[in-house]
Every structure is written in structure tokens, then in C-alpha cells.
Length: 312
Image 1 (cartoon, rainbow, N blue to C red):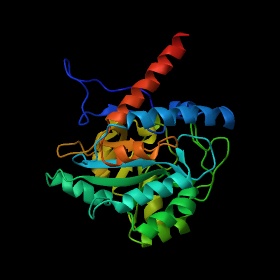
Image 2 (image 1 turned 120 degrees about the vertical axis):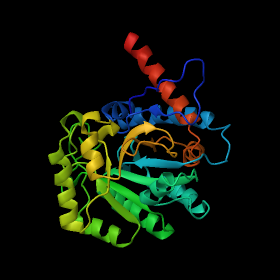
Image 3 (image 1 turned 180 degrees about the vertical axis):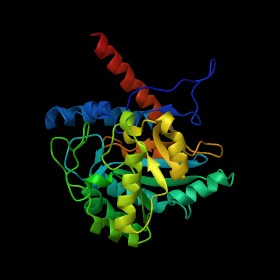
Image 4 (image 1 turned 45 degrees about the vertical axis):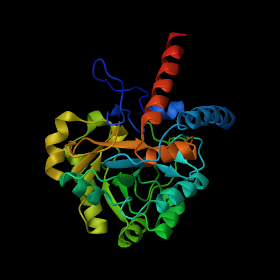
């Protein structure tokens, strides 16, 4: 997360239809989360964040926004203080809310894209998990399976069966385990899980190559028998010069730009909405309904606080 907000048209105020570029999963997100500090410090700052978010979510209506809201998760119940590591207790409450939505609201990524391409603005929610942490299998998968909730895993295939270590990783100090191919086969065999491309090595955006894309595709096809149809930019950062290669290989490419997806969205610039550890349930509900004003307001507060700190 960059903590910055996107440009708005001159003379207008931001609306929920406007996207805010926030790089999901960036190093700055992890610094904000307090991963370099102690647990007590993270708990204190986390409590403040939750209070702010709770206040921002108070006046959000329950009418769902148009189009597809694609939620970003990374870890579930990993035991770290990282903002991208949602507790199992919180994820259970979130899964319960998702399961209570009307039929046809929580859909696989392909179905959401089908609706967009058909010109439909039907409210949809898509669940995605970046990277491929094993705690997604341990803690999220039983809840998703029990509730019949479809989801996509954007997999960094080179870390399957190993440790999730790369520059800026949420597991940089803990060496959290990655998913195994056996676990991935179990989830995909259920029909609920779609495995998508997140490069083989979790390559930095400036180092993205066709070799990285093809290596991940080959790994997934070899072990799961299906070639990925979707991609997510590492750190959520688009790579414009790679867009022709992405269009040739994938149906979509997902960014970390916050917003809903409606007819006319560029398929290699899908917007998503991050779910964080300090999101109170009302704040999560606003995201779930595609009501993103609280998320953008929070991003502005974080950006302002960082700017003040930089000047101090």
C-alpha cells in the first residue's frame, strides 16, 4: 500500500466510482503495519487504526455498489502482527458475512469477468489470496469450503513447498511456509479454487519478464493440469511495457488500485480492495458492498500522517 490517493477531476470531489491507486502488499504497507517493531507497538497502533476505521464506516449505506468488488487477502491466522495477516477469528466473521449475501453475489473471478464483458453492472464480490501462504489452506480453506465460497489464489509458484521469502515479504523474518502442490490439488479439485499467476519468484515489478510469467504458468500446468488464465501484479504495481505480453497470456491482470470493476474496465488493470488485520467488521462490510469512501478516507489519513512524519 502506498498510502496515496489518486487524482480526481478538477472541481469535483472523489466518488466511489473513482479508483484510488494503492499498491496492495508494498513494503510501505508492511512498515505501516509495524512489522519492524514489537508486538506491543503493533497492537497499540493497530487499535488506533481500528478506531479510525470504525468511525469512517459509520455512515456507509448497505446498498451494494455496481460491478465487481475484488477483495485482496494475503495471510489468514499466520500469527504475525502484519496488516496483511488477518486473524482467523476475524476471517471467520468475514466469511460469515460473505455467506449471508444473496445467491450470485460471491462468484468466481471468471464469472465476474463474464458479467463485466456482457455489459452487466451486477454487484459481485470476488475473493483473492495473493502469494500462496500455507496458512490460507490451514485457516481459510476449511471456512471457505464449509460455506461454499469460491476464491482465487494468485500463486508465486517457485515458493510452493518452501518458505515464503522475498524482498518485502510479510514472512521475511518468520519464514512462513508456502502451500504444497498437494494442498493446491485438493482445493482446486473442489471446484471452488482457481489458481492464477503471480510470477514464479514473486519478481519485483521492474524485473517482470515473460520468462517469469511462463515459468509460473508451466509450473501450475505441470502440477495441477490447468494453465492459469489470470495474473496479479506483484506489489499491485502495473507494468505498462509488459501489457502486450499479459494480454496474450491472460484474461485479466489485477492491480492494487482500489476501486470497483464495471463494464469498460481495462482487463489488464483490474481494481481490487485490500482486507487488513485492523479492519473492524463494519469497515469490512463497507468494502464487501463496494462502498469505498471509508477506505479512501483512511488512505488519505495515512498519507497525511506519513507526510507530517517526513517533515518532522
